[in-house]
Image 1 (tube, rainbow, N blue to C red):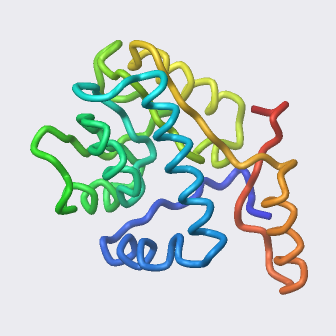
Image 2: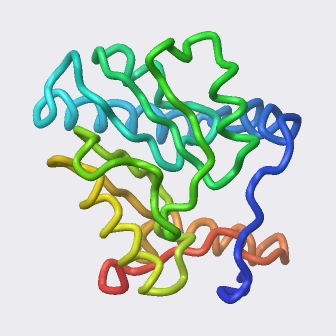
Length: 187
């Protein structure tokens, strides 16, 4: 397992981001995960936030996987990630809109956004990287501060089949488990 006292290093170059995007969600299992997340997020946003004219924060934005979904709902998107290479990459995507914004930011240090300026915060699988309760609390406080109503947060749960299958595979390959997961109680 990774050392919780050592922060994970974000992607540092555009080449690393391109490589990550080229490999991510390519296996049949990963494609199903992506489809399920896209479908669930689309349904939640439609049912609770509505369509058209909304402003959504995607944090961490990664390489911009959810950008087409957000635009399909008529949203203006602010993409943020701790990795400047990720936000630079998102900014260069052909579907990055003229009213969209991308900026490197660390939610634990505070977001460069005004109070209540976002209609919905979408935070997909970040919290398992936050190894201290204070980090999770700070992020949730920031989401509450910048959102005028909604924050959707997901994380890898240490009780899920995905976690245990990763642990088993790592054990069989005699490799360390790289993804840290937290329990629902810890969250």
